[in-house]
Image 1 (tube, helix red, strand yellow):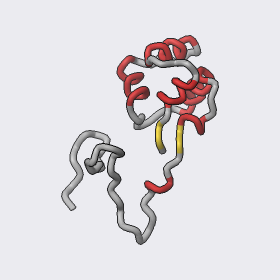
Image 2 (cartoon, one colour):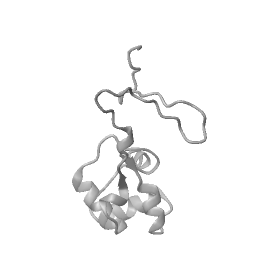
Image 3 (cartoon, helix red, strand yellow):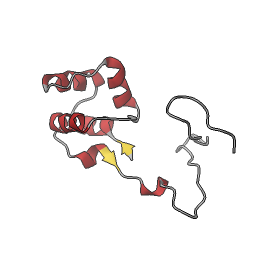
Length: 106
């Protein structure tokens, strides 16, 4: 899945994370500055479904606006895992564990 919060917020006229954070708080979802930064500029590791409901209400959007499926990234039985290249960077994206530790050598 691709997290699309920033573009969805921009399409609704919200250009700053702090503005969205304030609107979410007005609807009962208080998010720390650190977590808001992660939601705004990255891909969240986990997010409560109730929080997604509030985000959708505040932005007036559907869940499909925030989460874009990427079925081509799913490993299928019998296929080799393909490493993706970041668009325009020319560097290979290497999978990493969520806790920051490196993966074992292949």
